[in-house]
Length: 391
Ligand SMILES: *Cc1c(COP(=O)(O)O)cnc(C)c1O
Image 1 (tube, rainbow, N blue to C red):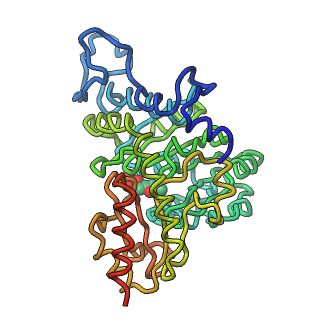
Image 2: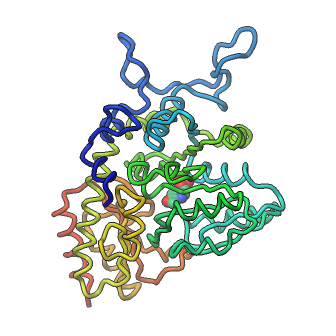
Image 3: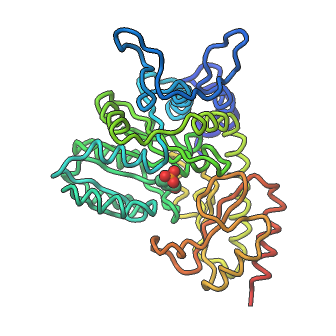
């Protein structure tokens, strides 16, 4: 953990945002100015169109372009992704994939080259074939050891996912950004796993921070959402235009639920991440567990780089059990942990990743998302399930 990390955690004053520690910032993020008799966080605005007599000026004209509930949420996310900076813009989307696609498809044209992680989110191969169908060259390299450096020449955009999902490898974002910018390439970072409280890609030099808000940002497993935060007005205008023409917009109810959830983001992230570390430390002692990964473990291969750029290490722990059957029995034996995909929710989930076929992981590979249960209860449940699933 570096010094700025320690400062932020103790909730001390952040130079970028006077008087506001991270928890304070999270509970107040994006709130409008207080108005007598109005709620603190205004409820969702359900509107396809707005009163608009005369010349069509001002932000709110049609519901596919703008909504006041999005505006509050976009401000909130911007304050967390880039505290103290008013030169950034955030746009919310119907899902993480809508946000991911908005950057890739608005920034790339036929003849461009893009660098994607070879070990990233499982929908990226689908995106890859669509990009290729549009005449865009796609190169891939693994996240670990900054391997993407080797394929940057001539690329228009570098896509980083750090920590990667589900392998939890980490790359040196500052270093990759430096190399990409020196070659004239833009850089986008998928910040889903870290959340803006774990990592702030724009401060590491990236042009875009992109994330699925479906995961820990909203954290209750009941909302799909995505966002893009970016700093260059022209590139963000292209992302906005993409949202308008594709129409992948969040409903006002989802946007409002997301904003409501951000108020507890620091509480959830601190609880879930510290339990994830405790669970990883216990799993490390189990002989049947191999390939254990958690960037917050001091001896994890990713820890050194992670500690230079992350302030919190996430709620996902990955490990491998000896066989597929053992992994299935383990998942079945868990009582406090739902066998379900996705991650980041207040209720722990785990799954055998190989069941989807996509990720290049062993049959017994488990992605475990740590929730907000009491750490002792969760660890006891896991140890009991490991024992019951043996033999
Ligand atoms: C889930 C996820 C996405 C896609 O988000 P959706 O909200 O499911 O569309 C993108 N990137 C990462 C790293 C994810 O985990």
